[in-house]
Image (cartoon, rainbow, N blue to C red):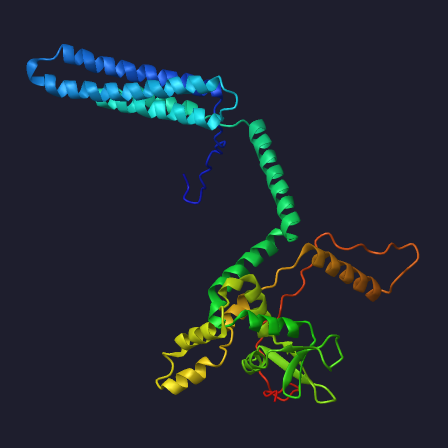
Length: 369
């Protein structure tokens, strides 16, 4: 054969489960072979000389034990065959066990292991029609499962996997933030666009754009989150600073929502957790305490790995906007031309930006008070 010739491997049809009747027949044949092997061993004992009796009796007892087990599995397969509620997999198990017992009985008796040939009958190959039918049933089952999961999560498979990866990130990094539920509430107020700083106090305005009054927000937690750059501030004309989550703060907030058990029960517990993280970085006790009072930033690798999952409704909304923008960009309505419909495979909404806020000359300030 030339060196560059490729050997063509024959296509092997996938294995299929044998019928219930085949399982019963194979199990009974295996039991017969096992009993025959045990009988041969007993015959050898009867015709043996006195010096070899002890060894042949041990062989006989071993073969007899395997034969009893083979008959037990064969009887069970016949019993299950009359019960339509019994799964075929149970009968297949009994048949395979009977064959294995028969092979061991023949090995113990020292005869030819003809029972091993019965295993091929339990590994029947599917015909082309059976294979196509099984594949069709499998695809239908997968489609039904996908539809059920979409109805439950309102997300497709890709975004469900993305959400699972985000949960894994949250489980590993939320506790390292050193937050309590109060820190999450501050960021949620900032996310609403109504958190502002005025006259040395943090408040959540009752209405967006009205920077007067509203519910009080923890001053200490707001200052800590701002100092750690989880919050950014934009100065208004009247001196009010409106606080919103930075890209890092938005990602940290989403992770905290995914894994709320990673939040600490109290400010003291959160401080102790932060203190344990910074003990090795500083030698002086005062430096350790000062570092523990600060909130650590979110790991940069976590910000890069986090991707916000997109729901099916958001995908449809984005597809509709894209179709409208394309239609308007191409000149809008034209006589005898139908307006385009949303694409069948909508594009994803971009994930939350993960670039760290680096400060610089902008409206954002480092101090609030």
